[in-house]
Figure (cartoon, helix red, strand yellow):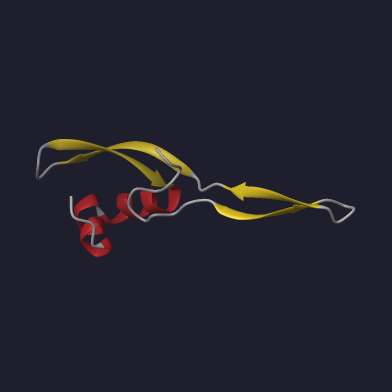
Length: 75
């Protein structure tokens, strides 16, 4: 599975590492992903999702059903 948030779609950013002598080499800044099991009481089941830290904070605040509804993700 790729390093990508399953809800927001965040993925790595590509850029250059620049040394003191100004030589440039490619590098990737990866998102802060967390594998999390989330319980959905309405359906009496759990989901295992790979979420970014920002998405996890929002899910904790609003709840998984409300957040998925706002994002337009059908589950």
